[in-house]
Image 1 (spheres, rainbow, N blue to C red):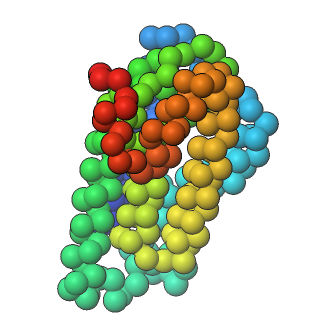
Image 2: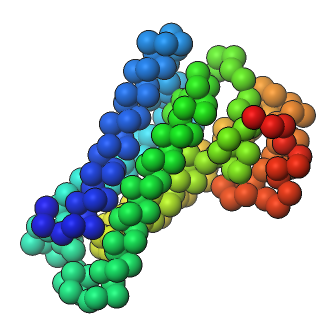
Length: 210
């Protein structure tokens, strides 16, 4: 891969998904429960039919961006226009930062971490990154996907990014319904104070300290 922003972004994505697998194995070993990689919920099974190809595209398209094919190759204007190169570099570094921040979120969740909606008992995490956003991992994933589409401005990457964002919103709403059922008024209060993907004002004075 000759293009440096593509290289940085592609490596960040590969390390991100490797981290998902490692964290899943860690949850199984330390806490003895499934992490939801194989979804048990019917809604999530249907989502995974779409999501698996999207994730596969997210992982592979940056690696194929230097191939000479009109559908996947990096446009020449993105390689040779100075200000676009600067923007692509900024997006590549932002994608790498999103991965590092995601690792912080994984550790903040502890044994509550999962990909799918789990039915087992676990505590409600509202401190650290979760005092800023109800779904900080999803927020970072969306930003990381948008950064990838900026680094690799192709039609396929744009379609993957839009699909990913839509699925993230559907998944977040489904999880919130589950958490309301599980935690009741405690989670409703949390929803009132903390935004789904972005912070709300005056959050720090209303949430318990770490």
